Amino acid sequence: MKKLMRAVIATFAGVMTVAAVSACSTTGGANADNANSEGGNGSAVITVIASSNQWGSLAKDLGGKYVDVTSILNNTGTDAHDYEPTTNDISKIQNAQIAIVNGAGYDDWALKAAQQSSKTLVVDAADASGVKTGDNPHIWFSANARIKTADAITKDYIKLQPEHKAQFEQLHKTWLEEEQQLDKDLKELAKDKGSKNYAAVESVAQYLAEDMGLTDVTPKGYKQAAANESEPTPADIKAFTDLLKKGDMRMLITNSQEPSKMNDQLVAAADSGNVPVVDVTEQMPEQYKSLHEWMRALAKQIQETDGGSKSDK
Image 1 (cartoon, helix red, strand yellow):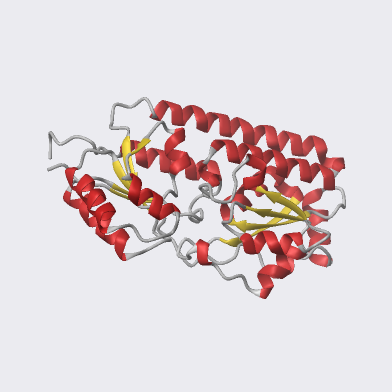
Image 2 (spheres, rainbow, N blue to C red):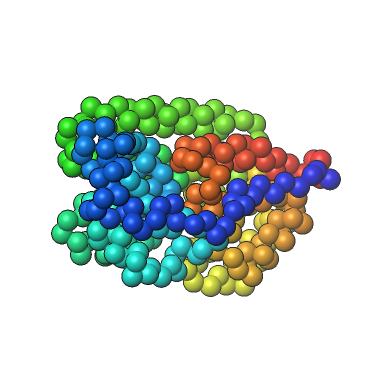
């Protein structure tokens, strides 16, 4: 029997917020001192609040020393969909110069807070990339969404600090070159001879799988129920567990930030069918310093799975 693989990407939880509240204020001595030491021209750095660390990482890559970025959601042990913001979270957003939200219903609390502030520019990643509420909101896994959001962020940086236009454009160019290299890497991985079929407990990594040329064979009834956050029927569950026990697929993708008895049941079925299980979190684990690094690590883990063949089981 082939050796089962369990690729657990997110191994860290309880990550502390990356910057103290005092560093997030749009006024005060902390930012002034930071500007003199980092900005190089006495201009205050741009204060940026991101609803989640995957977008915060992107904002930092695009802004370099000219921005001060804080992410609110950065704990891979938190259920992001049910997150209840604190009054401090709301205050951070409303006092930021730029707020970056995911949109598409994923973080409505952040979008509403940002829209209530007349001094905060809002970058809505879903809106920028043409994704609407009801669509799969996990758009940071989409190359198109990352590029469109990066464009929107850079545009706002230049609007706030036109004197650094050349620097922001260079940072954007460097980031885009890395994105293009990631796209080439994903296309190369898609050429391997392993099975192209996979199933998922939920749609968290759908965009990444599509960019890798993989095919989702999750039973339709179960998939629709999961997308609507409703309970799948017993027939849907049986169809899914039978499919996993058969074992003719590359992997089962799970999301440890959405634990459930259903998840455990499907993982057990995958184990019985020798289907590798790949755990993909929503927030970026702390060991990764950029979206590109995280995406590349996930893609490598997926490429290394060896499901889809019963001949050696």
